[in-house]
Length: 133
Image (cartoon, rainbow, N blue to C red):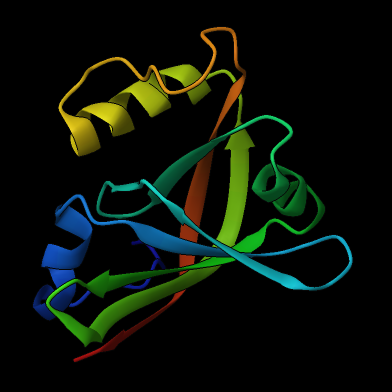
Protein backbone atom coordinates (compact mmCIF):
# COMPACT_ATOMS: atom_id res chain seq x y z
CA UNK A 1 0.00 0.00 0.00
CA UNK A 2 1.27 3.47 -0.92
CA UNK A 3 1.95 6.22 1.62
CA UNK A 4 1.12 8.84 -1.01
CA UNK A 5 -1.54 11.25 0.26
CA UNK A 6 -4.87 11.02 -1.53
CA UNK A 7 -6.60 13.84 -3.36
CA UNK A 8 -10.14 14.10 -2.00
CA UNK A 9 -12.92 13.47 -4.53
CA UNK A 10 -14.15 17.03 -3.82
CA UNK A 11 -11.04 18.39 -5.57
CA UNK A 12 -10.30 15.63 -8.07
CA UNK A 13 -11.63 17.79 -10.94
CA UNK A 14 -8.79 20.28 -10.41
CA UNK A 15 -6.19 17.68 -11.37
CA UNK A 16 -8.26 16.10 -14.13
CA UNK A 17 -8.90 19.38 -15.99
CA UNK A 18 -6.11 21.03 -18.01
CA UNK A 19 -5.61 23.87 -15.52
CA UNK A 20 -2.28 25.55 -14.93
CA UNK A 21 -0.38 24.69 -11.79
CA UNK A 22 1.63 27.38 -10.03
CA UNK A 23 5.01 25.79 -9.33
CA UNK A 24 7.02 27.13 -6.39
CA UNK A 25 10.73 26.42 -6.25
CA UNK A 26 13.60 27.66 -4.10
CA UNK A 27 16.35 29.45 -5.99
CA UNK A 28 20.01 28.74 -5.18
CA UNK A 29 20.18 31.99 -3.16
CA UNK A 30 17.29 30.78 -0.98
CA UNK A 31 14.60 33.04 -2.42
CA UNK A 32 11.29 31.65 -3.71
CA UNK A 33 10.22 31.60 -7.34
CA UNK A 34 6.77 30.79 -8.76
CA UNK A 35 5.89 30.02 -12.35
CA UNK A 36 2.86 28.55 -14.13
CA UNK A 37 3.34 25.08 -15.63
CA UNK A 38 1.39 22.48 -17.55
CA UNK A 39 1.02 19.29 -15.54
CA UNK A 40 -0.51 15.84 -15.56
CA UNK A 41 -1.49 13.51 -12.75
CA UNK A 42 -1.69 9.72 -12.88
CA UNK A 43 -3.40 9.11 -9.56
CA UNK A 44 -0.12 8.90 -7.67
CA UNK A 45 2.38 11.38 -9.15
CA UNK A 46 2.31 14.78 -10.80
CA UNK A 47 4.39 15.42 -13.92
CA UNK A 48 5.59 18.74 -15.33
CA UNK A 49 8.30 19.82 -17.74
CA UNK A 50 10.80 22.53 -18.57
CA UNK A 51 13.76 23.13 -20.84
CA UNK A 52 17.27 22.37 -19.64
CA UNK A 53 19.02 25.46 -18.26
CA UNK A 54 15.91 27.41 -17.34
CA UNK A 55 15.60 29.02 -13.92
CA UNK A 56 13.20 26.41 -12.55
CA UNK A 57 15.44 23.60 -13.79
CA UNK A 58 18.42 25.12 -11.98
CA UNK A 59 16.34 25.68 -8.84
CA UNK A 60 15.06 22.09 -8.80
CA UNK A 61 18.55 20.73 -9.39
CA UNK A 62 19.77 22.59 -6.29
CA UNK A 63 16.68 21.91 -4.13
CA UNK A 64 14.55 19.02 -5.45
CA UNK A 65 11.52 19.83 -3.31
CA UNK A 66 8.64 21.91 -4.71
CA UNK A 67 5.05 22.96 -4.15
CA UNK A 68 2.31 23.32 -6.71
CA UNK A 69 -1.00 25.08 -6.34
CA UNK A 70 -3.91 24.39 -8.68
CA UNK A 71 -6.73 26.91 -8.28
CA UNK A 72 -10.30 26.62 -9.45
CA UNK A 73 -10.62 29.38 -12.09
CA UNK A 74 -14.25 29.94 -10.99
CA UNK A 75 -13.49 30.22 -7.28
CA UNK A 76 -10.11 31.52 -6.11
CA UNK A 77 -10.76 30.17 -2.62
CA UNK A 78 -11.01 26.58 -3.90
CA UNK A 79 -7.65 25.01 -4.56
CA UNK A 80 -5.33 22.10 -4.01
CA UNK A 81 -1.75 22.51 -2.84
CA UNK A 82 0.77 19.70 -3.15
CA UNK A 83 4.29 19.60 -1.70
CA UNK A 84 6.87 16.93 -2.26
CA UNK A 85 10.14 15.74 -3.66
CA UNK A 86 10.94 15.84 -7.36
CA UNK A 87 13.02 13.66 -9.65
CA UNK A 88 14.22 14.65 -13.12
CA UNK A 89 14.29 12.57 -16.28
CA UNK A 90 15.79 14.00 -19.47
CA UNK A 91 15.30 10.77 -21.45
CA UNK A 92 11.50 11.16 -21.21
CA UNK A 93 11.45 14.95 -21.50
CA UNK A 94 10.49 15.31 -25.16
CA UNK A 95 7.75 12.66 -25.01
CA UNK A 96 6.36 14.24 -21.85
CA UNK A 97 6.19 17.76 -23.29
CA UNK A 98 4.36 16.34 -26.31
CA UNK A 99 1.85 14.61 -24.00
CA UNK A 100 1.35 17.85 -22.07
CA UNK A 101 0.96 19.80 -25.31
CA UNK A 102 -1.79 17.42 -26.41
CA UNK A 103 -3.54 17.82 -23.04
CA UNK A 104 -3.39 21.63 -23.10
CA UNK A 105 -3.57 22.58 -26.78
CA UNK A 106 -4.86 19.54 -28.66
CA UNK A 107 -1.64 19.35 -30.69
CA UNK A 108 0.39 16.13 -30.30
CA UNK A 109 3.70 17.92 -30.96
CA UNK A 110 5.18 20.73 -28.85
CA UNK A 111 6.40 23.44 -31.24
CA UNK A 112 6.93 26.39 -28.89
CA UNK A 113 10.70 25.95 -28.58
CA UNK A 114 13.56 24.90 -30.82
CA UNK A 115 13.21 21.28 -31.97
CA UNK A 116 16.63 20.40 -30.49
CA UNK A 117 15.80 21.90 -27.09
CA UNK A 118 16.52 19.44 -24.28
CA UNK A 119 13.37 18.98 -22.22
CA UNK A 120 13.22 17.58 -18.68
CA UNK A 121 10.31 15.59 -17.30
CA UNK A 122 9.83 16.06 -13.57
CA UNK A 123 8.00 13.65 -11.32
CA UNK A 124 6.53 15.14 -8.15
CA UNK A 125 5.80 12.61 -5.43
CA UNK A 126 3.23 14.16 -3.08
CA UNK A 127 4.18 14.23 0.58
CA UNK A 128 1.59 16.78 1.72
CA UNK A 129 -1.76 17.63 0.12
CA UNK A 130 -3.92 20.49 1.32
CA UNK A 131 -7.30 21.47 -0.10
CA UNK A 132 -9.53 24.45 0.53
CA UNK A 133 -13.03 25.26 -0.63
